[in-house]
Length: 631
Image 1 (cartoon, rainbow, N blue to C red):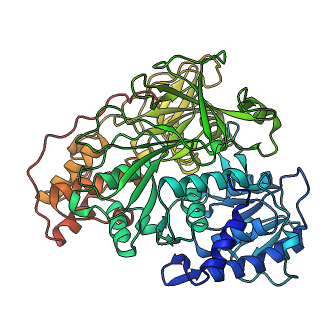
Image 2 (cartoon, rainbow, N blue to C red):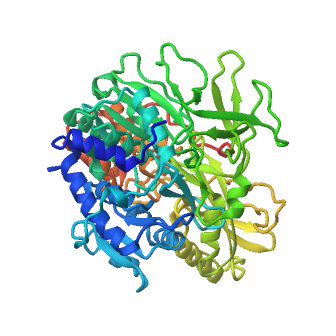
């Protein structure tokens, strides 16, 4: 591996190609020369405020920034100042931001303008504007004391107790990853990479650093573009994008577009969940399935996905990348034979330093590597993986615990449980991971109110409704809600919105350590004619309702023309699948942003009619799923 740091590598590219575009965001073009100058100026101010890093002390500088040229400037500046950075996605809410800020314990926060005003920071924290940082004496070569083993970044993942865990990664890991990326994807200065991922997701690392260390161009996509696969495919074409990373569910939606809509990418990397879709044989790009936890520095294994006309069976997670070793072990730490699932342990160049300020949890997951020499560690992933005896390829089989991926994000049900227990009026809570009929993961939460809400009279019913409305509006993201009963106490299950509540059989006590996982009760279908007096729906509206019903697993008559997409449990991936159904059946491209703005079947039918769509013959409605498969 090169004996260098990430910022030194980018500086060499800036010296070679100062006029080349480094970051493009709409009409804004930041060249490598400008990136280097702005980062150097900001780095001097950061170093002046913080001083040099203390040996052995990790205190990353938080960045309250979204995807933008300013993000690249801030990241590079903090590294030049000798410190590590910790990105915070403003879109993930204030509660998570406060948790990350507390974990970093830094007296400095980088942002733009007055964006951090909503954070209500303590007086001892100084906010530094990336665009107007002030001035300080310029740093010299002697001030750059960072080594390959120094902290580069801290990325916070889900925590089991409600507090996000910060994964600390040194420069040498990211340098090794970038070097592998350049070789594997043949990255050159002519490449253009899409910046789509949340800054809190390590997919953004795969987009940003291999691009900047190669002297290539990073292109920022607008929010409305990155949420719509068809709009994204067009955007790829217009901006000449050659490499992109997508979370698995979104990647499957892009891969599933018909051949005439496929973008002219060179490489599409997908990861974050089990990949179930193969590319068309005529797809112009190569699909790579990437796997790896944040603790392994972005990824640790990859597999080139064979096209649908040649590939069969489950799509593997492949083989280890350069300088990475994997071991499959049983519960006693012994190697398992080929074909037998074992707990995947990762060793070699990608293993992180550990969890920020959490020595006990670090010791539990980062174990001595018997094959790596003194001080070497291996990371126990908790993922069950088997090695195919015939091909040697690795296949993902599941988890050894309750952790789950929700649309690409790693989620610990314990974190959601802790959040639910903080709600007013909740005595206890439990959250478990479930999968729906398609295999998509979601969280099912069970709430026990502080006071019993039993009874069949109108007062008790009103109290239950009030509790449902209150907790639905304040519950943890990703939970779905409905009513159930705990032994001797009322309980509410996070499964669907209050408008779809129903009474369920008793569920196990959430506080019982030996409780079985509660099964998800099936909601009753709404009665036809719930909104009487409305005119008979048009043929287009009837067809749209059929498509919505097929997507949500309902009877078409249960889909009221004026019900909200979100009230049915819709989310971004559901929206992608739904607009694809509409395009295939009615020949009209409904933008995902349009669906979010006017989220009813009636509004969608009006849009289809205005666009000249023709209702296709009805297909037999999909049967509503019963209980989803357990993860």
